[in-house]
Length: 288
Ligand code: PAF
Image: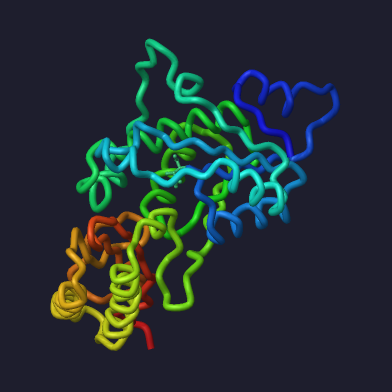
């Protein structure tokens, strides 16, 4: 595995030869690797001969400077894990490489970026879309791999690719979970043992609410199931930012059970923000 720190050298390594290049997969990350990242990397390596992993804790997507300062970092451990999982090039730019002096352009993705994470973390998706657009331009990948834990992020990136004709295939892979269901996340490292056991209530509650919604007749209101979910999270000691049912493509919130839905949640668990989601297959009006 090569480690490259400059965009110019990375482009030369990937596209400098005269022969047709083998296809390239990009796995954009912010480091502190866990099995969720490694599953993306292995899938990328299975599908493409060249895998570039970017490791960049992107300051513009953090709306809270303390959150940025506390974000876990482990470059030495990440280098070993990435190499073992099949990474060919680890791109580790410094902040000035991505945001040189005078940097002024921002990518706004519109409505899909507004609710949920967009509403609770102002500017977050502008930062994500801007850095992802830059990484796509630097690497020119054929495909890019993202985890479904960040459900809204995958929709934002798909919108970005479609609207700007970026021509990158977006591969979204299922969330990798701990044995008790907690979605793997770099932030989980910051949970102390008491908080860690409380954190599992998030996925448990999402699954219970999903099961409840799937018993409803088409068109029945979802409000009572959502209220029960919020109450269960509060009883487990989690502070709810949002716990909502939405249309899986548009993220418009829905008031009734009718066809596919996604349940999205964000909670604070003793100062650590956790997000998760589950797909819901509600019965559809008119279906047998
Ligand atoms: O999901 C992440 O780790 C980040 O949001 C991403 C896509 C690497 C952009 O900084």
